[in-house]
Length: 344
Ligand code: FA5
Image (cartoon, rainbow, N blue to C red; front, side):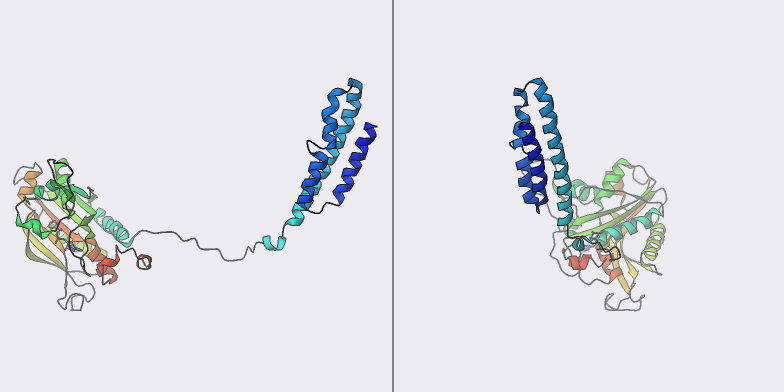
């Protein structure tokens, strides 16, 4: 009787499968014919109660029926899944243009820093680096700017608050010249270095003044480095940077860390020195400060007085970028407006 029932179950299951149209129906069918609590499942579970002879015959029949139904189930499932795919929707147009992936890029100032570094490196300079949070010593004292020196007022400073009394005051560096002092402490001339970096000034902003901007310092020290070396290197640099003939003009100035000191201008790269609104009709653009390194700075670094000569200069990269790309407001660089940033 049980043998007949197994055959009926197999036939019934196969027949029922023919009417299954959906995956949900198929799942119900699977529970009914192949599930653990299905009739066939119960027969298989009850095998242990039969004699070994019966077990052999009924077991083989029941397992055979189960296998047949499982095979039919798998075939039906594959057919239903295939039928459920909307092939029209899945069609891929291999000739369609690709979708552009938006990705970021380096900020204009970083791009220019790399360009400036390349030019100096091609003239034998190496790149040095220093911290943005700096001690009063490296930013001022080691550069011959003592606490009561009036020159401290030339650069309005962001001082860092002290929670507990400590020996040193800290600040956000006001110029890249702070790295000069650090570098000289650990290196012996001759050397030529450049120091790119972000600096901070506690001052009101306007179209040509920022509180956070980028400077570039250049320092060359040796036995007989002169102003002529400075002029040559500065001119070579600017001609390379602006890709045109550029003249350099030095004007007497004052910086505590250089003696003599000068401001230096380049011929206006917009009007080639003929006069325009950007150079205020003068034909010259103010670029930065420079001078021969003050012997007191060498002494603070531990060099014997008079043994070495060197020049140093610092200029604003942000101002240079304004000239190169004719940007009229310095605040655009750090303003975070992506419409501006994406242009470069
Ligand atoms: C200095 O910072 C000196 N450390 C430069 C120097 C180095 C002189 C080595 C001698 C030897 P000054 O404060 O003038 O100097 O700044 C240098 C340049 O930074 C300026 O010519 C200008 O291009 C730029 N700069 C100064 N203040 C601002 C500002 N608020 N916003 C944008 N650029 C500025």
